[in-house]
Amino acid sequence: MFAESPILRRPSTRIHVGDVPIGDGAPIAVQSMTNTQTTDVAATVAQIKRIQAVGADLVRVSVPTMDAAEAFKQIKQQVDIPLIADIHFDYRIALKVAEYGADCLRINPGNIGKEERIRAVVDCARDKNIPIRIGVNGGSLEKDLQEKYGEPTPEALLESAMRHVDILDRLNFDQFKVSVKASDVFLAVGAYRLLAKQIKQPLHLGITEAGGLRTGAVKSSVGLGMLLAEGIGDTLRVSLAADPVEEIKVGFDILKSLRIRSRGINFIACPSCSRQEFDVIGTVNALEERLEDVLTPMDVSIIGCVVNGPGEAEVSHLGLTGARNMSGFYLDGQRQKERLANDSLVDELEQRIRAKAAVLDEQNRIPVDVKHN
Image (cartoon, rainbow, N blue to C red; front, side, top):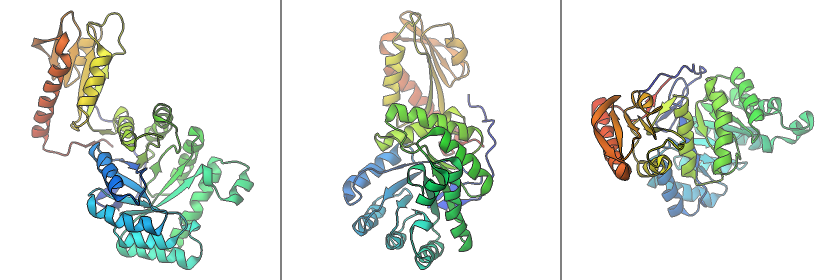
């Protein structure tokens, strides 16, 4: 059913964002970011809970003003998932959200300004045991680096990141993670590869501003997949111009495809052809929508004919092999005597998948999130 991933993770140090371990072999954390107005507390809390419901480990919230910081305090009191406060330039906002319980500060030390302001934020983070995420972006490189390199390059992103890392090193603060995001796949991948050789801290992956749901998912899958397959990455965000809930779904699908984390149902389905004996596409789409709440790791194969159907079903928790009027049903790789009517497949399969999930949960008595190193 589930095979171990052959990927060897890059060694890294361990930090904690709230109660979520990051780095040093911990499961790769999947996060998203709210796109509501932070000052709209009710809307932001509602969105955080929707993001959490589909499996997010962490949620980032933008805090651009002091009013947003006050709203952050209320938001933090109403949710139970670790929150990362996203702050730029104003060190006072960082101090305020730290006081209000932020689990991580996304802030670039070099952008804060004077040395005493940087030290104030770092000392506060140290005192409250809050990690920092250094976030370098190809679209906002320092002017002198733009002039030096002429355009964003992997080396430019690395130099920018190391400037901020050096500040934290000088202040004897090692509880941080780093990202070097870019909207270009090769630029981002090249920067992460360089950075992975320079520091031991955890790396947060992302292809920034990747695009809409379809194009952004493809671009992120390619870029993050290249890095993850090399063992690089300890947290990730799929940045989509779409509902943040979709970012979490795509993120877990990427990890699932590489056998790094198994969460929810892995549907194995044929693209369908004239051999199909039932509506494969309609059946799979309906089941994916109905079963979004099932987080138990499972392989479910839905194949429209008997050419590849039996082979896939024999290595799945549940399998369906198309036949005229009544399709073959497999459980734990074994063909069952019962057959399922093609005109009621969605209802029948949903019932059996939920029943199998309950059995697996009872047998395992472990978190439904499976880690593969």
